[in-house]
Length: 422
Image (cartoon, rainbow, N blue to C red; front, side):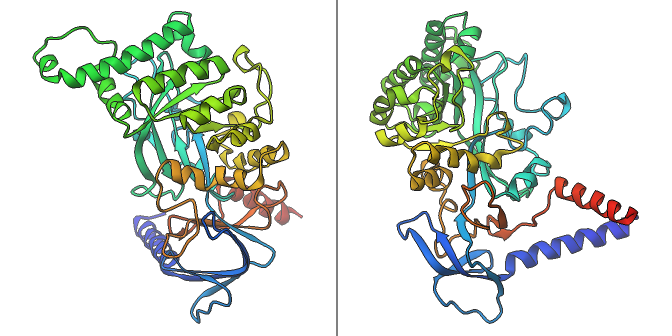
């Protein structure tokens, strides 16, 4: 292909993208889960003009709109997976495509893996065509307690508009892994976390002194301590990977003593101390399918964990399904269905996928469907928590995206070859 042809194709793609954004779309006669005070609206129309929801109601009219029949279908906000490595991992087993951790470096809390985010990752359209429009992107620790900064991305695939929040907090481990890197004891891990928080505040207070080469020895490099300051000041969250009930109680004590905004990640035994988590006002990110005692710290894992946490008043968000929480992050809707099957109210499961992440992370442009908001929504063939239902239409950040991925292209390629041979 010569350069002239490449330029023509690039301009054509740009024109199509602009047209998609400027198009008027009318979805008629569908069930709308607004995830707002308006609740669920039956036999309702939604009008999208220039990428924004222009109107919601019955018998809407727009003479120049492209009509989509929503009969017997469901319209929801885009799905949010609250713990992934979207865009920083292509193939786990291929080192060259894995940017989710850094080994042998002298920093931890300040590691911003979002700088390695690839909006052109094939993982993004694979999840997007199944209704996932946003995800939390978090690092993995290699040999440190603090893994690094946590970010939020949308799955638009745009180089300039995919990263919505560069940092919403710092991820730290307080689990079996943590005891291993802290000298072999959870007590040492907890002491190290406390010391890091103390040092961050001390470094901020004595910055001039340290700039002059003076001051006591600190537990972390200056960049890491600076990264912890927004956490100490309540501007960002401290995400804590924690599983065991007793560990959860200890880390909640740390949060209270430093007046931190925390989010628990994993919390497999959270149901045992649900009242304490609720009293602390601490949200949790959980995989509803985790019910096996794979480690000593998860001996109490059970499928009723989401239901019991919710009943206690804990705000829950979902990730999953297990190791597939990046490449198949869209399966988080199935995880929500599992939670409902084991006692979680349906409305609470829907909130965990849509509105709760939007509220927790102050995402004003997603998590609900309302007039004058950007169109960030999915039209499903039926109940989004049912295995046999699928996404038929997806809007991300105001644009309808093509229902195409590398997998669908390969499918179509070889189906065509097979039909030619027949």
